[in-house]
Image (cartoon, rainbow, N blue to C red; front, side, top):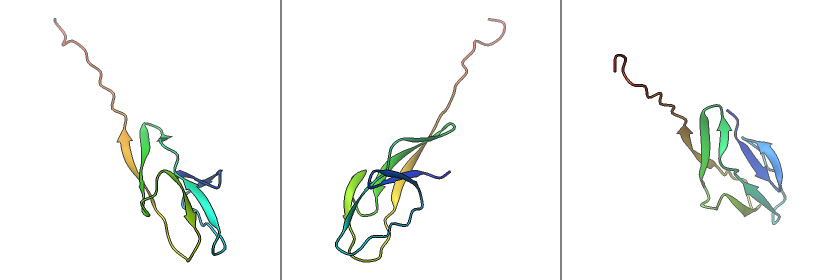
Length: 84
């Protein structure tokens, strides 16, 4: 499952390579929740401690990781036992 990120207001698929000049900045975001069938991915955190959508300054090569928690849909079928 490819998760979606937002870079400067544009939706991109992760992983994504952001190229920017030193001293410039970009706004990154991790939309939440994201659905894939019965599985839902909810944004948990960025590796730099930033909020779901925040500004990053381009100062050197590096990596940022968005962490998501996984939620599963569970369906219960509750029926009375036969013979009651």
